[in-house]
Amino acid sequence: MKLPKIIKSPILHFALLGLLLFVGARWLLPSEPIERAPDTRIVISESQVAALLGQYEATTGTVATDEVRAELIQRFAEEEMLCREAQRWGLTENNQAIDLRLRQKMAFVSDEEHSDEELERQARALGLDSDDAVIRRASRNQLTRKSKRTTSASARGLRARLE
Image (tube, rainbow, N blue to C red; front, side, top):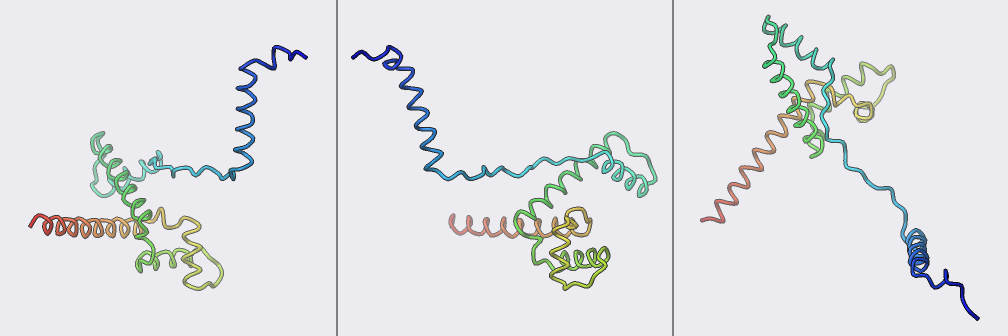
């Protein structure tokens, strides 16, 4: 009994082996969603730029030049980066100033009575901690203090190893 030429073909064997591996992998390995890295882009909208320029002009009484505009945008981007890093490190958690500010904001927008913890949870869920100037400043300051402590501790450790 002769087998057809197609059954002896190496390309058919390759395709069948690939199909077998694919089906086996799907069956044996659990399918977990691929975890994506968080979006780290800092996008500054035209309305934010207009607010920065308006604040500058109200403070100084002069119209911002292109150089000043670029510097304001750069500062805003750096502050946003510091705030995100402080949140990533968890420095905004259990901070009395930030927690108080969130409770105040949530109590203002809420029409029901809630506990302090519930107000904080709701405020964070609504993202009220991401656009508040007081919270951003507190986050930035806390990150700066932590990085100074870390740097000085690293320097002391390095000095001790060198001695």
